Amino acid sequence: MDMRISSVYNAYSVQSGRGVSQSGTRVDKGRVDADSVSLSAQAGDYQAARRAVANAPDIREGIVGKIQEMLDAGTYRVSAQDVAARIFRGA
Image (cartoon, rainbow, N blue to C red; front, top):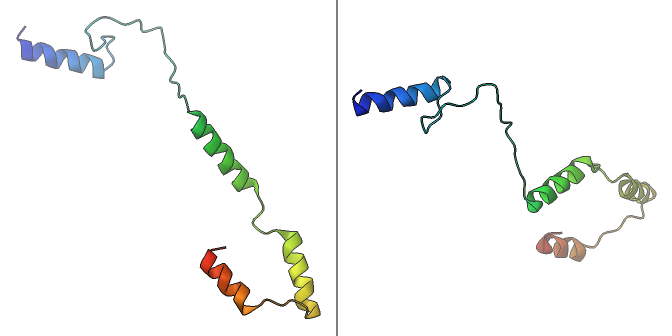
């Protein structure tokens, strides 16, 4: 067989699942290797943090309730300087 034809045949055999590996050796069709994924410790920490954020409530009811009570009573006061300081701090 011509070398180019042989290369095409081997590539076709691998892609079509005819039991020939890339090295050209036969493989056992009864054996199935399971895919596996391994994550780093940092990736595991990231996933745990994402789960914690996803499970956290969007609204902190206790804080919102206290502010609502103060607003209703007319006792909620915020100075303009505090607001400006927090805007510049990014908090």
